[in-house]
Amino acid sequence: MSFPNDRTYSFDANLELSDNAAAYTATGWAQKGGADGLIDLGGNQGVTPVENARIDAVCVVDVTAFDGTTTDEAYRLIVAGSNDPAFAAGTAQVLAEMEIAGGVLSVLGLGAAGVTKTGATGRYELMFTNNVAGAFYQYVKLFHVLTGTSPSISYEAFIAVLPEP
Image 1 (tube, one colour):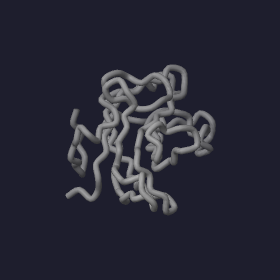
Image 2 (spheres, one colour; image 1 turned 90 degrees about the vertical axis):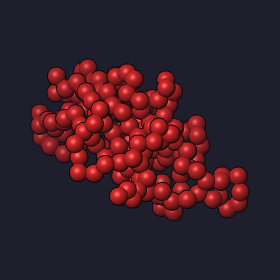
Image 3 (cartoon, one colour; image 1 turned 120 degrees about the horizontal axis):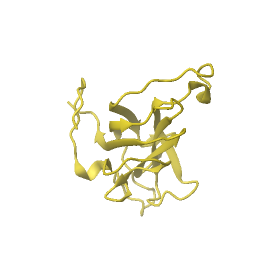
Image 4 (tube, one colour; image 1 turned 45 degrees about the horizontal axis):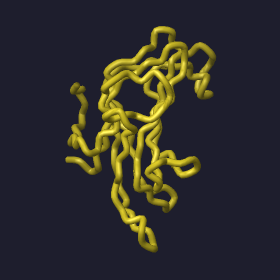
C-alpha cells in the first residue's frame, strides 16, 4: 500500500522487517515470512578490532490498520540493534522508538489521565544510526509493544539507508 508523503524511499526486499502477512495482536518481533525480520547491516565481527560501518537509516513503517476502539490500546515500535543475530538477553540496544497510535498519554507521563493520543493509518518514519556511543551494531530488528484491551495492528516495515535523494 502506498501512502502520500513528502519523501520517498527505495524498497529493497532484503531490507524488509515486516511483510504485513498477518495482524500483530501481542508484543513481539516484527515478522517476515513467518520468522523474525532480521537485517544484517554488514561488518566483520571475526577480526580484531571488530569492523563495522556506520549506517544512517530510516525504518519505514506503513501502518494499514490498528484497533483503537476502546481508546486504551497503545502501539510502540522499537528499532533494536545487536551484534548477536539471536538478540540474546543483554545484547540489544534501542536505536529508535515511537508510539504510533492509541493509548493513554498518562501511561508515558505525558498527560492527564483520560487524555488520549489519536493515531492514524499511514507512513511512520523512525530515523536511526547503528552507532551508539561509539559502539556499532551489525544486526537490526523491529520490536512492537502492544497494550490495551484488544490491541491489533497491521504494518509493513523496511529499512532504507540514508541519504536518499
